[in-house]
Image (tube, rainbow, N blue to C red):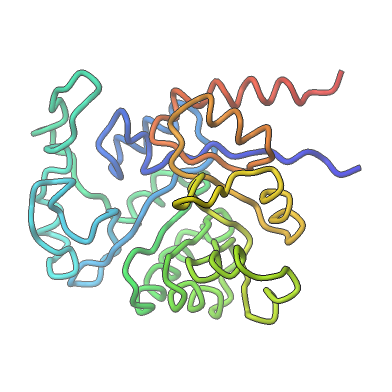
Amino acid sequence: MTSPRSPRLIGHRGAAAERPENTMVSFERALEIGVDVLETDVHQTGDGHIVISHDATGMRAAGVDRAIAQCSLAEVQTWDAGSTFVDPEGKRSFAGRGIRIPTLAELLAAAQDVRLNLDIKPPNPGMVGPVLALLDRFGAAERVTLASFHRAVIRAVRSRGFAGQTVLCRDEVLALLALPERWLGWLGVSGERLQIPVRAGPIRLASRRFIDRCHRLGLAVDYWTVNDPIAAEVLLHRGADGVMTDDPAAIKPVFERFGRQRLPG
């Protein structure tokens, strides 16, 4: 009999419901709550540094309408990454507190024993080399999962012999949804994890049948972005391998109850 899977609580951009997303204070809060994985996103500055940001510009997170790829690291780190965040009380309580956009190196240094899920945002595979070099420098590859929507990027990751897990890109997910299982290997669909929403338009992606199909193919299935405890509980009971949430404080008790329910006797 196979041992039960141990699902992962994944902090989406840290604890983005409580702290400015993709900042060190957000990651620290997520770890304090007890997430299993920190999920984050990376871009590259004009002078070659890998920084943590979901967006290609600083507009939404810092109120600066400048492209990260056209700025130096020094410029990017003058932006106030707490300025636009509105806390649960409706206040901008993190503005003017010196919160910056961090580098990937800073996160790797601060979270040396933490599993990370990194989404490489730009479509250009030229960013893959610098990201992998950083992971090698910190000996972090085996605890990192790499994702990208872009096929060229994720193929570049895999072709370099990356030691960690990779996530299916958008094209691979579409092939998984549309084609018989026997065709997927022939088409070059690979990777270890699937990270998807509960629904894609009219298509339900969170049925037990679909999750079981992924498991037969050797794929773990993580769902984003789930902030409702009831929805998270349903996913865990259907066999989801990970729940990605902005609000790990709300979802953590669901994982604790689920873990107790799975104990023998």
